Length: 429
Ligand code: SF4
Image (cartoon, rainbow, N blue to C red; front, side):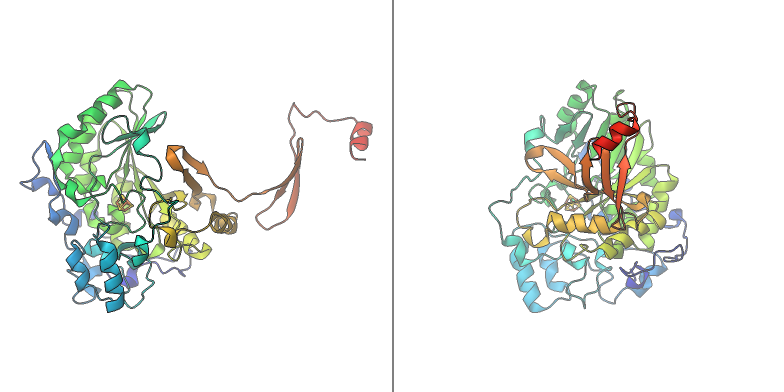
């Protein structure tokens, strides 16, 4: 797509900051694999036409010649990218170790003249990925130790992760599950999910199923509908949450057929993964509108990435445009996990706290996500917040305002009755 249609990191944030035409979602060709002969009822398969369908619409007429049909699907495709020989050599070393993939719609967001382009850095392998610090791990958030049956993680009491596929439309260089996501998982039987579905049915405390992976939207609409209807039939479930990067990297995947696949008894929440304002484009606007108009709740997770989005202005623009342009609530800003080979992308916690401190008060609370750290070994998320408490004595606090002023605050509660004047005066001596 035209890079001119992306939201520049320096874009003003007012209502007129981003203005696009409003094509009907139904005008887009349905990239649904429903009609694929591969989509048998009991097999999960991903026709390449789903992942790599060419984009449509006039916005793509400005795509750089020669790149419009490009897709990063196989390691040999790296040879076709317009990158310098030195970088290609570095990429080829790294791609031996980890999966490589990106749909053409996402590749067209890249400014190839900029070696530090934020989209490029998320998809083109870097040699630094091969520098492992021994303190980094394969399973940074402890999925395995909380997996009672295959393809399911039960870390928190009332919700589980369900992995119907480990395949993705894009292999993000910062992926925290990069040791698990795999193209080899393109085809398998629904029967492989039966132990997980039985586990969910047997645990009445589970309210929420988070369908993740991999990326569940690489499955066909028929397969997703089949899975959704199995979950619908489990009476104690209330919410179906879908974690996906497809609306970002291949927004044409969001179609009326996909919406129908998710419509059922359960409340539906789609959690997208935008990391940079440059990822917001006209097709993503259309995709978000389609999901919003379907009545789905829309949230977004962002990973804090050194050299990609680790500055307040970039993240403020991203968080504002997620809400003001896409109608997606920023949910979490993740501190980059201790995944192997990500030292070059990981910021300090202090840097993340400083960014959140700069944003708070200057950015609407609706637009602010919670900054979180996933504790290693599966201990779950812990919030990371800038400290706004300067001091405390009993019920008397001193807070720091977002402008840096010291603001005393006394709790007026039954536990802190008003003291007689003389007693209060002696307290103050
Ligand atoms: S889409 Fe998600 S699971 Fe897949 S590579 Fe990217 S971050 Fe990892």
